[in-house]
Image 1: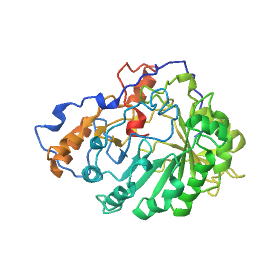
Image 2 (image 1 turned 135 degrees about the vertical axis):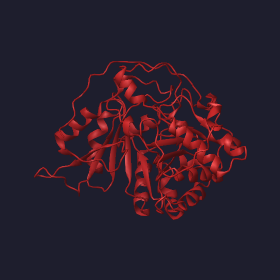
Image 3 (image 1 turned 45 degrees about the horizontal axis):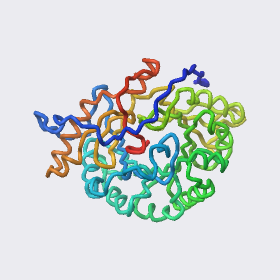
Image 4 (image 1 turned 120 degrees about the horizontal axis):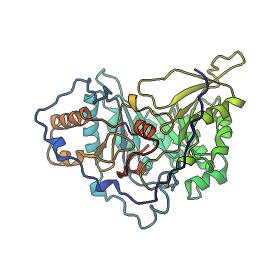
Amino acid sequence: MGLPRTAPVAERVIPLLDHRARVLQPPAAAFAPATRLGANGQLTDTMGRPLRDLRISVTDRCNFRCSYCMPKEVFDQEYAYLPQAELLSFEEITRLAKAFVAHGVQKIRLTGGEPLLRKNIELLIEQLASLRTLQGLPLDLTLTTNGALLKRKAASLKAAGLQRVTISLDGLDDSVFQRMNDVAFPVSEVLAGIDAAQAAGLGPIKINMVVKRGTNEQEILPMARHFRGSGMVLRFIEFMDVGATNGWRLNEVLPSGELVRQIHAELPLLALSPSAPGETAERWGYADASGQWDRSAGEIGVISSVTQAFCGSCNRARLSTEGKLYLCLFATQGHDLRGLLRSGAVEADLVSAIGHIWQGRTERYSELRSLQAGDTGTARRVEMSYIGG
């Protein structure tokens, strides 16, 4: 497998609007199916995709204001976040997680917003860590964070049962990083959080860098040099058209193929096989002098949902802070599981509802965007800050 080619990109502008995900209404029929559906771990959607990965957003709040996720123009001091009563409780999250696990979920990722802002998050981690897969194994329990609170939370997260963390870091240069987070938060504090996570054993650690052309692409090589040989996996993410508030432009996307070639010119790379079914990141290992993978140097990943859609193998569902089930990162509609929970549903009801929703899943937004040259209609998409990345 050779280095990828760069596909031409055209400019496209998405207006900066505040489209709140919670105004979307789920189809009521989803919770009154004609037949009750049980669980045997073999659930698939209309494209034969299994359900293996669940992303759970535990808060819609964040202490950063990254332009690609929660720009200040929308998420300002007047922004009305969800009231506490509308959030799923830890017990409700665990009940739903148990129903998802019955359908074959093996991995749960806690996201936000910034999940470490959720008070007593360790208690939820303890509850989720007690669940077992259909094979009787512990779940792959992980959390994505911006790292701002990680220095003082890493040890308690590990003690609660969290296995590993993914940390968002969009550059090493402090001026670039502060411009990206837009709250003047210093990069040194995130690096200290990464060190704390490594010391606590929350690994293997993944580092996610969103690359936005014209903003932070100059940080690609410094990031690659810094994390090469560190035991951490650095992943580069194309700037995506998630939601409607980040002012996305296609000409600000740096194609991952171009990025890989840039790194390869200084630090030779070779393609690696996927680490698991449904893996979103394409893996590239650092090569040694003989052209073989130097495992001590490690690898990078590229997540290319704009230029190289991977919808065909997507096996993940997303649960929002207030209990709506979304079947795609680019979804326009959620399914209200919180309403079902609070109506007195028993476990069999939850299992059946989730099964019927997943069986009807048709979502493949990124593939359609590619086929239609970026034109996927004007439907309002859910915000990343609401269901996590």
